Length: 118
Length: 117
Image (cartoon, rainbow over the protein chains, first blue to last red):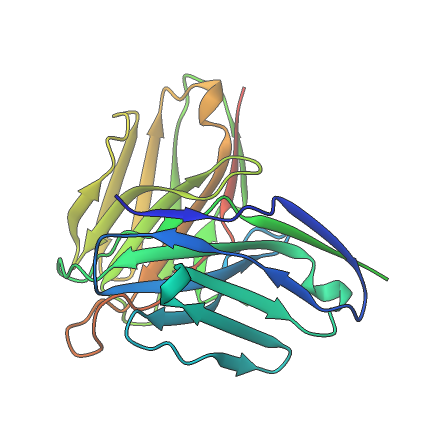
């Protein structure tokens, strides 16, 4: 069975601090995909990144960076120099590479609520 | 602005009412999804349509009835709901095209906040 664990329920930081959101996953599949989504108070889930299990390269996009380590089954997300607009709930998610006409089931972690204070 | 449009944004209904939630996307995506999200919880998958056919039903009660009239539209018909059905209902779509490969990101709408009195 697939499982995603986000152990940090809530994190509060002061603007300009760096913050890392942890994500640990479990799967028996050798091919799988990992995602991060951001959910601001407005409700929409905003896609941030998709990673497949064969690509362990870390990725940087502006102030965002992701550290994927298969050895520890972790896919952590770091925000550098956090800003108030980064305040949101962040979800890590996992899907198996099971082609069924293109409909894949996302397994979400419980989410981490990040509050960035001015 | 999101590319997946959901209407209405808010809905209050009694337990005997019949209403529908609507979702529309014009990105050419062939998979569409309904999720239910309670406060402080992650989204829970309800239904998936792939190429306008229902491909996944996560044992959702029959008081929720999905419909996919065409590749751009997805409806969720509601009837005789219970107070515990109050939640944010999210629609999503993904390319799900063999040419683009599987497990493409899902694009979400802003959701409909549903309250059952």
